[in-house]
Image (cartoon, rainbow, N blue to C red; front, side, top):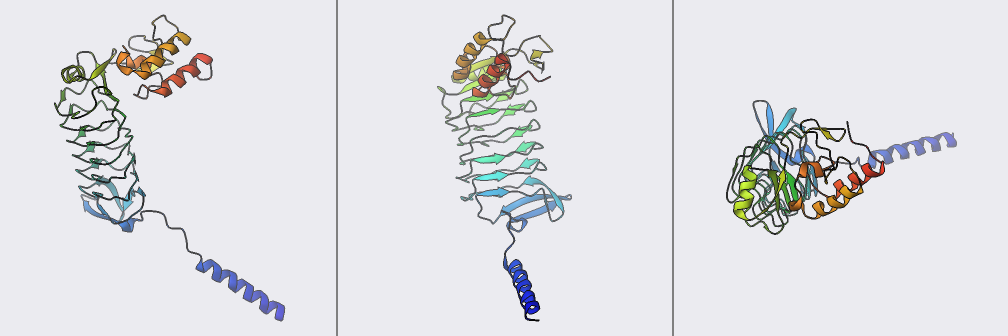
Length: 298
């Protein structure tokens, strides 16, 4: 009987321990957010938490979250990283402005509109612009730490100070669809550092030449590559000396272009990994192609 009683006590002790151990709580619970619902969709209007990493929920109160509202995270000095769900279509004016420790944002693929001064006075370092973005408001990235950015083909204009005071911006690719660039778009950017990449005869070229920025030309407006070959003009990715083959000579040329994109006569062909950016990863990928480690995607 004593053994049986002892067993019962042990079991009860184990159950008590299980009850007392707290369950892990994920950062930024929905209770930390305020929101409003319009036409059956939720807009985040505020955040009361103090986490360094914040994950915005895709659903809240049984409603799909499609917008980050005006000033929703304004002035929050705790946030360093924000993960946005793919349901987000709009980031409204000054949503993350003055979040002076914010350096990383996971960008939703369905984002279409970025409001005015959204990331002003943050230390945002990288922003992978989704293809669906068709509007960027005034001063959206003012004073950030962006180093490069590739703009989508749905944009038709660039507003005042969108990239103003981006003193570390070294490379921006502007599509032919952009026909209007405000004179103050790159206000106080470093003309000795920034290279504007675009098409010959485009608004991007005109802006660069008028405002003293280096310009690198994209030759073919219809570059669609399959197995390394452009289906429109027959250009071969990585064939930088135009001799019909890709070899170590092209790699040597690419090293120079990566170091100074303004010297590259055709960025589309030099951008061998086709990520919209001319950087060290193109060098690595071309080296893999030359040595047979990798092959061109079909």
